[in-house]
Length: 98
Image 1 (cartoon, helix red, strand yellow):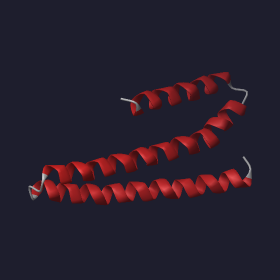
Image 2: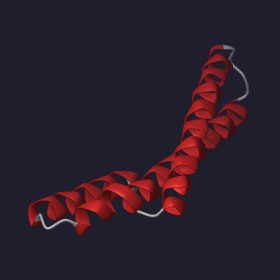
Image 3: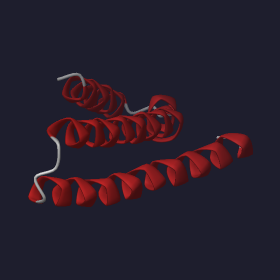
Image 4: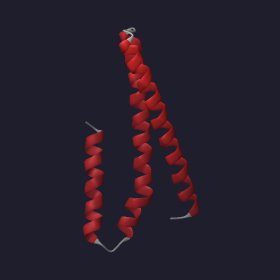
C-alpha cells in the first residue's frame, strides 16, 4: 500500500468517525423530539438524516476495507483467506441492501 492510500484511509476513517458522532448526537435529539411529542414529519426528517450519515459512514468503511484488508488478502497466497474475505464482503453487502 502506498503512502497516498494510507493517508486517504486515515482521512476516510476520520470522516466515518465524524459521521458516527454526528449520528449519535442527532439520535439523542430525535429521542427528545419523540419524548416531547414533536411533529412526526420533523422527526422523520431527522431520522432520514441519521440514516444518510450512517450509510455514508458504511460506504467509507467499505472503501477502506477494500483498499487495505481486502487488497492484502487478495495478494496473499492463502486461497482459504481469499475466499473468506470474499464471503465477508458478500455478507455485509447483502445486509446493507436489506
